Length: 116
Length: 113
Image (cartoon, rainbow over all chains, first blue to last red; front, top):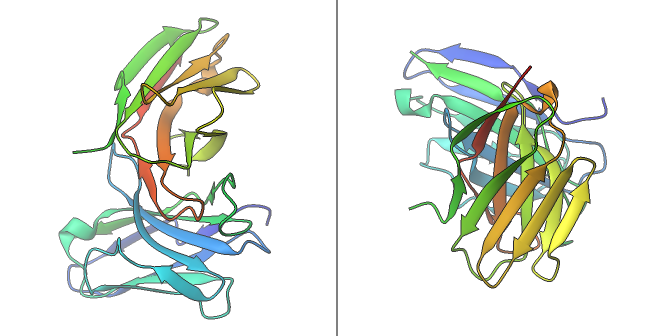
């Protein structure tokens, strides 16, 4: 597809379960970002990849959150032992190159995660 | 405390009218300032990106301004359309890599017929 694709669009899980969220960036985009967006708030940064290298994971809220991008394209955000406060929309974005200043980030439509 | 503050939080206007959304930031220094449009249930879409040396940039009916001295930006929407109903998010970037974006809370705009 032409844009960033995220799956699933909706995920409901019971507290304590593990979940995996997938992001397919735009083909050829070097940089990939994950964000968490609470209802009515702006997105908050979680982690950043340049190709397969995770250059910044300072926004991950706890060690239950893990992200990978093993081949420099598709990325997976995994949340272990989910808690109710993990309920949010998880957005993925990609941009053409890193360290290029005025590159827009292209966002997917997110995965809405609800923890019961 | 959020370092990017937007006002108003919400706004209702009639179709065809103009409106201006405000963004004040305390983030410093910054690499660029961005405005995004986010439709309900969708991801944000980039409208404009301005470096600190630019003071205006247009994208169709959207015009963004930046005053780096007063740390203020605005987004002006001309001749509003029903499809402009969305949240508009101001974002300040601390660097070029894109991993240091500070998002405002957004202004929710509703355009009524």
